[in-house]
Image (cartoon, rainbow, N blue to C red; front, side, top):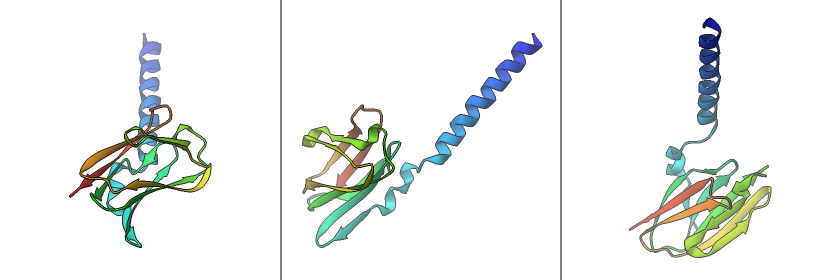
Length: 128
């Protein structure tokens, strides 16, 4: 009986530790405050792709010419296959580099993006 209880405690500790390490190791969606800028009259939304998309949520201004700038650095997982279904965008990102995707001038909406497998997602909320 002692062996079973000890095994359960060890298993819970290992799983809990792995969960804590996984959530601390990735940027949070609260990082979205500083990833939108204006360059040459265009709104630039910068996200990174590796083990998901970061930040997961961005807020941008509606009605402006907008470019999604996706940065990769040693990205070999499924987040290198980026999809924005509502805009018929489907592209493969290079393992390292920057890819720019012209989003046009979206009106007030929330744009949803995913990896090719649908495991990782991100969103851009366009506000007036």
